[in-house]
Image 1 (cartoon, rainbow, N blue to C red):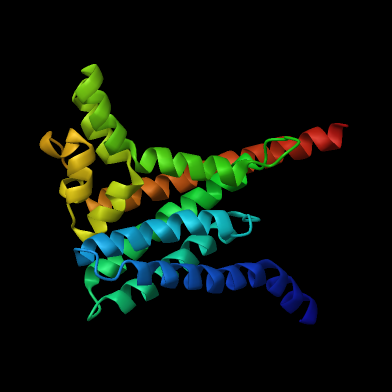
Image 2: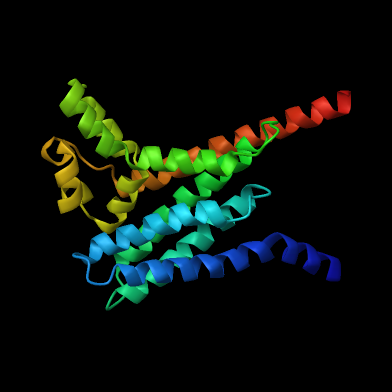
Length: 230
């Protein structure tokens, strides 16, 4: 019993400590948003902060269960921060937290898969962070490409559909691409696009997490076979 308790503490203890640290960072971040226009904008910014800072801070996942726990803990931090910012609890907060848990769980699972690639230096968390930033900001740079390089307008819909930022906005029922700041820096708000449905978003992340899990298992088995042969 004591050995099991020690193993659980060793596995989940660092994540729980990191959760408290992440909660402090997000709380401080939320304070800086006081007075900013729009409750939905503040909540979306808080969700993005949880996602990016959590990706950097959390200890790497040891297995798929640990990756799922990673996503759940980040979602709980967001839920608490969002509740503090709201005058009353809103259903959109809970739905956005579910989507955030799915995104964070996929990010942690992808980092776990990348760590199976033998390298002298582990850049897995940095690679995942870069992927999140590039994909999250894809509607912004897609709009610029369409304006400057006459890229096909289908690129607009693809960028909106694949962006994690769009998925978080779906949970808030918010058309973030027509907020003042984004409307100023990119023409995408004036183009035709539609957001993916919330159920489709969640199912998409569950399928992605399953594919990453299968890829991780394959990489682990291949590594074990290579080690036994040597």
